[in-house]
Image (tube, rainbow, N blue to C red; front, side, top):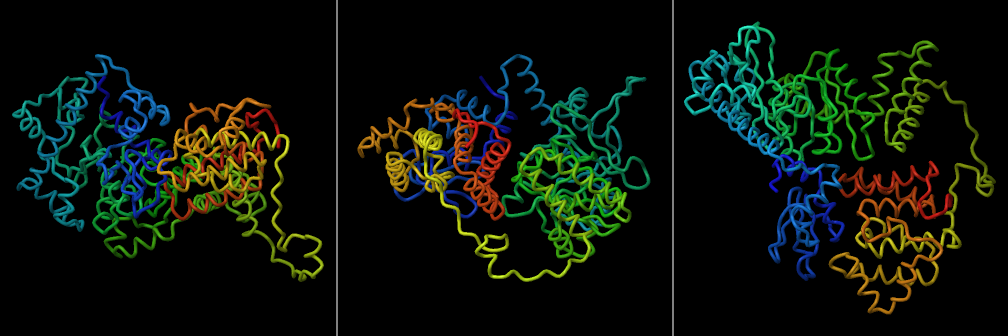
Length: 608
């Protein structure tokens, strides 16, 4: 079965390679990529490198993408590998039907028509008839290199495009499918959508042209026109400049969301190569998803006027339910009357960089938006502001993050509205012995394992026996648990093996433990004794299910240690947010939320 290229592309985008491969191989950061020992041949010196979009072993030559890795590492055929990855990514594998095949053929035909139109528009810009458009672009400070890089063009008199493309065998129906021709419903006559406009090709994330935007020169209206919805173009899903911005982020740039085509182009020319813009609409959920696939924390930088402030507030309100510890936003505020294009033209890159450096966190942005709208001069305004702040925090679907936002917003309001503090007497030395807050307390001892704790410790060990790749994420916490002697021996053996193992796989671990004389202890750990093993301890459990179950059970054993792991994961993500740190942080935060809500861990005990 031939799968549509757009589906396979989406699947690869939703499957971070370092996270997928890290389940089976111990990976270490090496610059902007990861490296480890190749899982496909025995080696002691790492020569296996993992990049954003592929892997390569410089020892044996193995290489490929996410689908290839699953096929090679698990011995699966192509469709089984695709089905497994699609299930993890939340995608449905398209079914092979004649209608689907015809739709894909039309998609490819449409992209070909748009590529031909792009060549026509670019050629016209270089001709005498495009002089008006060239003067406009050069007058806005763009260089010839920038004009060429973004593929800018000129749509002259109506009829020229149709005549030129007809000589290439492209008829009216093809042009209509591509959104370049409109039909008058009353007369039935057709006419070209763009004429006498500077043309901005709109590309998808892979750089394929999917539509155009056109800017009229002079006093005509509307100033900007975008192509209509087509099988390859959706205003709600696509972003202008996304293909170049992805490359910019890979090269260390900051993803910036601006308002218009010229903002993207002008900032890119100034060195900010990771800017994108919505397509004539307010920012949408689909566009936010696209942004977060490229960067965990893009900066929204809208115009410094009333409309720009309203757009930023709407974007904040839209994003709140989608925010997570690893999926956030920042908000940059431009001076009144300025936009990114004017900022870089007047003040250069340094002026715009200063704006980005001062970007606000979501908490600060929420607070400023609410106080600006409601005010805080009267008791009634302050009460209304507090209610609005509580409501905003409650919109965050991630319960732990929602709680943190609520606490920060409350504290921020108190700090800005509390009376001057009264003098505070110094603590006397007796407080230290009384354990009064404000002094250092000795760490709590880790409780010994007994009863329910013993059973949970056994199940945690069983999960690692079936899924030893989790040691990369849970090993530190596992080492701190108080275990019964047999489990403690098994743990020591697992940790010794993990130090020398080239691949963290269950078969290799079981073989090592059997040869080391731990077969009986392993059987006891995997036995359905007092309680049957939960689904997350099954060898058939998905990696995310196994990890989520491990942390949930661990939290019932020791919530304080779980909190420490959450804090450590959040600090790691703050320093270097990668798919791995994001995944670990997400699993820990969700486990802590389950513990707080009292959700049973599936082991048969309702509480610790």
